[in-house]
Length: 426
Image 1 (cartoon, rainbow, N blue to C red):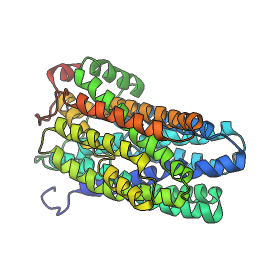
Image 2: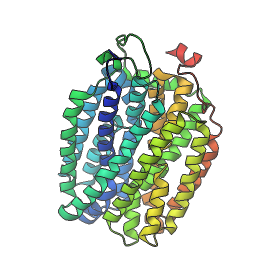
Image 3: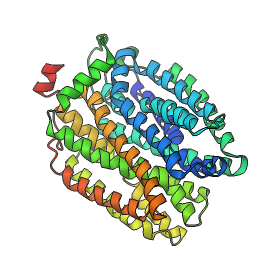
Image 4: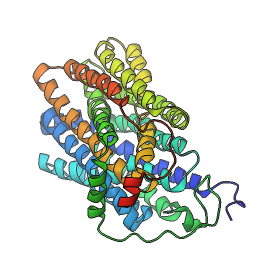
């Protein structure tokens, strides 16, 4: 059956997953647009609103390892549908809020938990299950889908907010979720064997996957118990913490407010983030191709070092729109570029079956870093009246991550199987 198909169904799954990821990314980037309107209407401080964003990022990250375990236990399609429902309810309910605790519950908890299932953990799981060949490229494409979400959503949402108010924006987002959910129900499949195929790049007769039993929470923690004995886990988690702090937490949350502090409009800031999305799609897809061919440690070193230098340049780029655009282009090239090398090194160390859940724990570190930067970025702005200190600190941390990446042991290509210790534990 596999040989009779011109296009492997795995590529259809990649397409649907890209649509889900770009929708999730668009939703997660919304706080940067809503921050100033909420501040003006409800008179909440920017640090208070940033606290809700931090909780969102913590939920988004902490759900990761359990999301991977739930997908193993109940299937990808059902898990994604439940997550989309949770996100839709949380976003739509935001239009009715009047108190800050409601923002925290609806945007921080509900949307954060829902989007946690629709994150790069989903990308890693899809790539590991459906692809043996081209896995790095697939991860790059799926990661690029998230940046495309910014490209499509941010300028539109910024213009809707400016013209009709922030409530119209959140209702529009909820309608997009209602459009995506039926496509997931009809087209997404859990495994290649569900459509009579082997993973892309393999030949043979597909066999139904053995049913997964047990408590997903216990499975996730058991996987963590094995992972913590590996140096690579701690190095990748540490560098990913800094990755999250320097992307989602700082730039994703505070770039638009920083632009407005310098006299630019929210639409201008959203345009810069969209520009990052364009160049990030190029950089992330290229990174996936490079991760299949080169030592991933040096790739991470390059990405973190360039990101650190660009963040140190950012405070001096607000002089005019052209220098800001130069930053957006340069920074955007490696926004998500770290994903493919990180996932490949985890797969080299822990094997295909465990890599999704281990990546979930590493991704938790990523989001904890993002949450920290979202909160402390707002706090530093309140104390110093600007973002200079936050940008410089983040750039310095990225340079440290670049050096740490060189000490990771799983950088080179390795056979796609679990290491003996992990395999025995499975």
